[in-house]
Length: 216
Image (cartoon, rainbow, N blue to C red):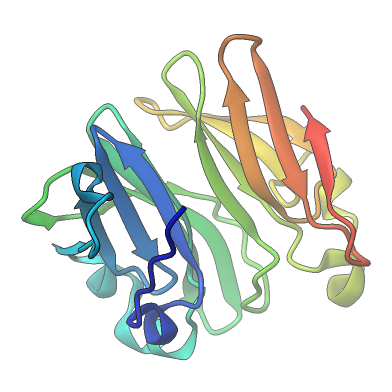
């Protein structure tokens, strides 16, 4: 077991996310810096990541990235496409979950919007979920948090079937149509689909420090 450090993450994090695809390890920071390294070299004394140029800053906004270090919520690579989940700022009092997509390239990646929840929340928050997972029938999974509904907003959105707050949804990769699979969640940041048994597992942050594992 070896420990690797990356000093740049101190200023471009603090969170970062990993994805494995075709013997490469991909890493994206909370501010949208994307890089990769070949796992063939992981036994070496020094393990180098190469940065991939993207248009993430142009889409999201440089000032917004500078203000918040936890905009990105996850990445998923599937069928040579890369999906990046992030908290989108529509305007000063409108924040929402969204996903960008692009063909996977190592020289430069041009993202386009794949999915937008289109439901404004009045403030930026880290309790927004945003995890991604592969799923069956050409679909992907996405978790959406509750944006502190109980503490600060006092609404019942996670239990309301007419919105996407506090839900786990599936999204069709071609049509972009979505379906609610589970609701009543607080902040699901763990997500895994077991293809063999056709079961979705998620982990939810508890309100008093205790997390829970859900079989959805």
